[in-house]
Length: 105
View 1 (cartoon, rainbow, N blue to C red):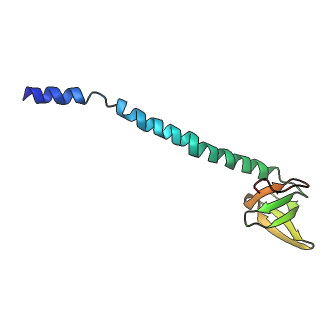
View 2 (cartoon, rainbow, N blue to C red; view 1 turned 45 degrees about the horizontal axis):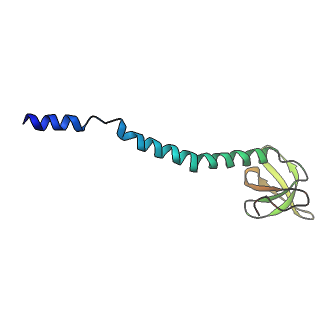
């Protein structure tokens, strides 16, 4: 009977050591999945914040146009001559460089 208690106490000594692989996996997920996603979101927010008049943009829905007016939360985009639409700034997917294609193409 005493041998049973002695064997069980010697096997349960590594309680914290068992969490090291789990913590390691969490750190790997953080650096491989979550951190790059947060970086892309931050870059997108910076792009949207720098939006100005006469920028060519592509919306998340694929509409290409030229910015004619910028407010706090909205931008007015001219998609054809005389046709303007009001879009939420966060739905602007990319800003097209003058004379170039969108960065995500």
